[in-house]
Length: 158
Image 1 (cartoon, helix red, strand yellow):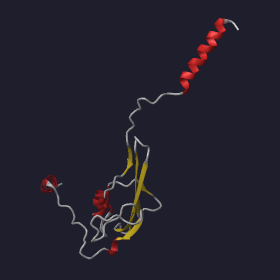
Image 2 (image 1 turned 90 degrees about the horizontal axis):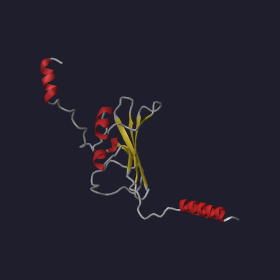
Image 3 (image 1 turned 180 degrees about the vertical axis):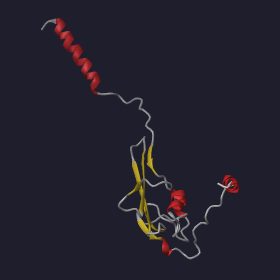
Image 4 (image 1 turned 60 degrees about the vertical axis):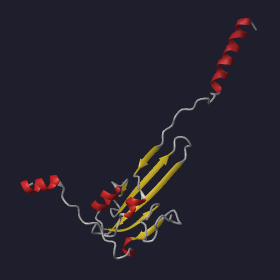
């Protein structure tokens, strides 16, 4: 072998070996990726039987999934992927309505708190609660009063 061929082969081998591994002295920053509806326990605790679809949408937000074949069911899905560890957390929550569009029951990872459950975590990850079984003292929130602009528009005639 001639020295120039030997030198070019050695240079090619060194160049290819440099591409084979990258030392991780400095790692890139990866962000947390949130997708879907973030539901807190306080939001779920506001749900009562008899709420309309508009009231549920106001409390929980617009659902991620509204199936045209099951119009009486709304699904709220949440997914969080941690950037530093890659760990994925998912949650599902469903609301069920009757034929009149009134809330009947809820189910999923987060559940409405029962009286006497101050900060107790549910034993199971998923459970269904029939909102008709809540005590009689819990009533749906009153319809919202008109704000300043609503009253002005009403007085003008709109």
